[in-house]
Amino acid sequence: MDLSAFGWDDVFEESFKEFQEKQLLPARVTEANRLFYRLVSGKGEINGKLSDKFRENCHSKEDYPTVGDWVAYRPTEYGFVQIQGLVKRKSKFSRKVAGVASEEQVIAANIDTIFIVSGLDRDFSMRRLERYVVLAADSNAELVFILNKADLRKDVERIISEIMGLFKDVPVYALSALNNNGLEQLARYISPGKTMVFLGSSGTGKSTIINRLLGVDKQKTGAVSAYDGKGRHITSSRNLIVLPDGAIVIDTPGLRELQLLGNGVGLKNAFSDIGSFAEKCEYANCTHTNEPGCAVLEAVNSGAIPVERLKNFLKLKREIAYNLSRHEEKIKNKRSKRWKTISKQARRIKKSRENAGDEYLGI
Ligand SMILES: Nc1nc2c(ncn2[C@@H]2O[C@H](COP(=O)(O)OP(=O)(O)OP(=O)(O)O)[C@@H](O)[C@H]2O)c(=O)[nH]1
Ligand SMILES: [Mg+2]
Ligand SMILES: [Zn+2]
Image 1 (cartoon, rainbow, N blue to C red):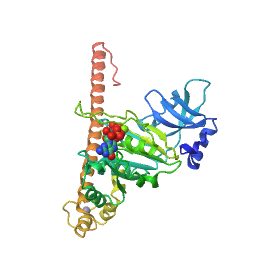
Image 2: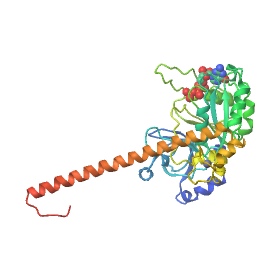
Image 3: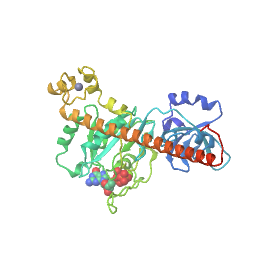
Image 4: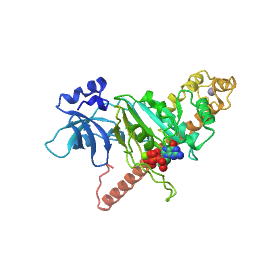
């Protein structure tokens, strides 16, 4: 099997050299469970497990292979192959792990296009799009908005122009997967060896769109029930599929939490225009809210930056700062807890030695 059908190219070939020397073979992750990985390789579909050494070298969540990753494996006679290396990623879409401080979770790796799918029903939210833009700005992949379920609304044009006003660099397409209407607009992103990931809340129609592109109903779809008040995902895990025309798609279950990463890099990239005006502000620590000599506010007054855009920027910035401060507080708490335990232990040891008449003063 030719690996270029799965997106293998010269860049990966070059990165793979260090593994080739060890007689390892390349494969792409199509599904990642906690216990094992589904892979496609030159020998077809195989199952893999992480080698102990690989696992030992994984220090955070982002170090583990994820869907779309290329890995280096050692073949075995039977059963699971052993994954021994991760090939350098060209791009990735990540979010902050829900709950846990500042850990990064890579949702999909080595993607060319990120489709953010919204449903034009009551689920639609401009605020959620902002979040995706900030996260995708750090991904090294192209971002595209899809407004699905266009059959459910009459004011589609108004929403499109509102989005275009707020997010100038992101193309937006309205379509109806149900009626098979407007999918041809996606053709320019779909070519052999290119990888696309579909992201968006549960029930927006990601799997329905993929089925349309596949030409068969391979992916399970369905109305999202709300019996537990949160809704239930129809797609249960991320998976990578090759389309008949050779493009590669990654389907994902709706992401419930979309927390921004604490490093703020995405924010900077997504709002680089504000950043370049900010360099001309009179005060280096300008908050762009009420300071005299604020070049960003001047740009808003002159119409160079839409006021909504500045509002979005400030809101997301506050959230990142909040996440970061929470993270720092956690670390501080952890440290002081540890310190309390250590000093308590020390006191106990000292006391027991005093009691025992030990004159040791080294603690
Ligand atoms: N009216 C309308 N309904 C649609 C459209 N596309 C999909 N649906 C319906 O929306 C529901 C959810 O579709 P799915 O494709 O399963 O949604 P999903 O985004 O994959 O959901 P998860 O897998 O849970 O993340 C199904 O009942 C679809 O029939 C559309 O264009 N118009
Ligand atoms: Mg789905
Ligand atoms: Zn300013």
